[in-house]
Length: 172
Image 1 (cartoon, rainbow, N blue to C red):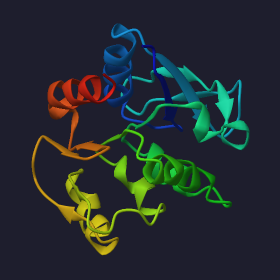
Image 2 (image 1 turned 90 degrees about the horizontal axis):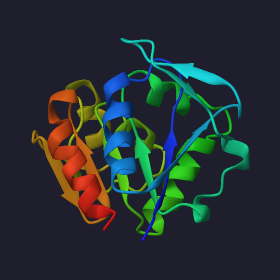
Image 3 (image 1 turned 60 degrees about the horizontal axis):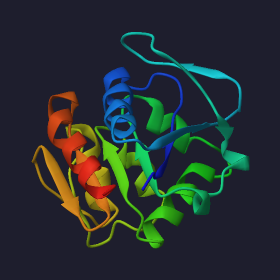
Image 4 (image 1 turned 180 degrees about the vertical axis):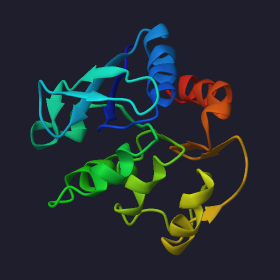
């Protein structure tokens, strides 16, 4: 069964943390919709200048229309959190509370801090984000991939093979 996966993205995302999971998702026959601040605009990755078109603005996106959420790392998550209305955190919260799969790598879990849904959850992330996640109530471990019910997290691009494997498993 084809699943619909929302990806929240802004400029300076970690290129491979977008391209690799999206390729794994699409290779399994699932659909990807990129959600950002402005539909039709483009965002660029921080290392390879990968250009990605925003399919839908966050103001038009409804979490109920999607089966899962992907949050790539880089500087994108921090910029998404800078949305004055907190729309990206609210969007992610809907996935967390509905127990839909949420995939976050590197700095991606920063967006999840704004969901207030991390208390008692086990996850991993890039080193510089771990204290913030602990302060949000999460138990943070240093592992390539952590699966805690609907939440799948990884640390860095080096973990992409494990991360992608768990994404594919969660979408089955």
